[in-house]
Amino acid sequence: MTADAGDAQRLTEVLRANAESLIDKWVSAVAGLLRGRSTKTELERDFREFFTALLPLVGSDGRDVGGPRFTEIRSLLEEYSRSRVRAGFTPTETASSVFSLKREVFELTQDDPSLHREVLVFSGLLDSLGLLTFESYARVREEIIREQAEQLLELTTPVVKIWEGVLAVPLVGTLDSARTQVVMEKLLESLVETGSEHAIIDITGVSAVDTQVAQHLLKTVVAARLMGAECIVSGIRPQIAQTIVALGIEFGDIVTKASLADALRHALRREGVDVVRREVG
Amino acid sequence: MERVPILKIGGVLLVSIQIDLHDQSVLALQEDLAEKISATGAHGVVIDISAVEIVDSFIGRMFATIASISRLFDADTVVVGMRPAVAITLVELGLTLGGVRTALDLERGMKILGQLGRQRRGVLPHSGELERDF
Image 1 (cartoon, rainbow over the protein chains, first blue to last red):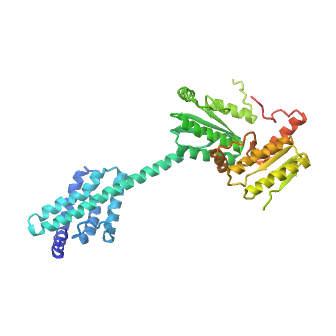
Image 2 (cartoon, rainbow over the protein chains, first blue to last red):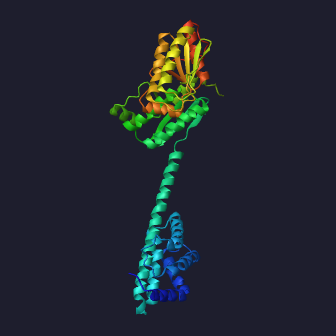
Image 3 (tube, one colour):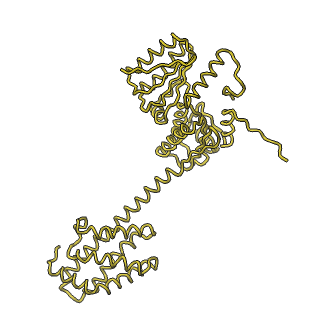
């Protein structure tokens, strides 16, 4: 459906002539929709930019929305959509911001039947642009999720030095292959860096232990042993101990302790450090 | 073919691997080492692999083989300075080096051999020096 150039020209003229009132109504409609979460001044600034970028595109039915002519409006919409996501707006609200213009243009042109065909094309264009906001919305969401997953991976695996020659890794949450890999590498590297001969892997915060998790733990311990360091596993909770026994997981000659304190005492003793209680008072 | 030098420090032989190991050089090293231990009567062998970045199963088995050879001459073997990536690779390959002792660095490795040597000679260790067994 392509409109002839004359009609497109005429619609552009009409839109340009009524730009002010059109933008005004558009802003009011969207502001009502967003229930005051966005100020009219902000909306007006954004929409004025859209409108300016949109005018030269009148006459296109939006099928070539990926083309070079649309670069400007695409980046505008992307930016708009991006800021909306971060501010917590729903995709419907974001897309409706674009669709709302349709109603205003329909009202403006309803008395001129010669423009109807052209308005239909224009409406197709707005549909494509609305979908574009939805797409960038989804993309931004995925970016956020990916960022957070990476941050989670980094944040939840600290290796801390708790004594000269003793490192501790408090594991929290669910252990999967990717996370265990990170923990393993970080722990082994820290052992080399600090020259520590003992490491305590504390699993108090681990919600569940299955054969796979146990396998990962065992691998870490064996790798540390290959490098000349000893690992102690601590913080096995009663339910987890039952699961481990029920699953028939063998910890072999790996030292396991009930609590981090016990594990530390054990490590210190192996380091040749004696902890003595002093009479107080 | 490059050969790995074997250095003698007291009663200990130091093998510091600083080249990319190929199967041939591994075999040559095992031969050289057997001859050197028998010639010097060393009581310990330290293999320093802190410069080794890549291992395969053949090299992994080399450590166990060297340990077995040394044991025949009544010498102890300590592998020192294994990098994290190497340790992970060996674990993934399912190699645990059997009874080979390991240490974080050369200094600690020499200390372990010193303790073992003293035990061997029947000298009682100073208190706290030997790893206590609990």
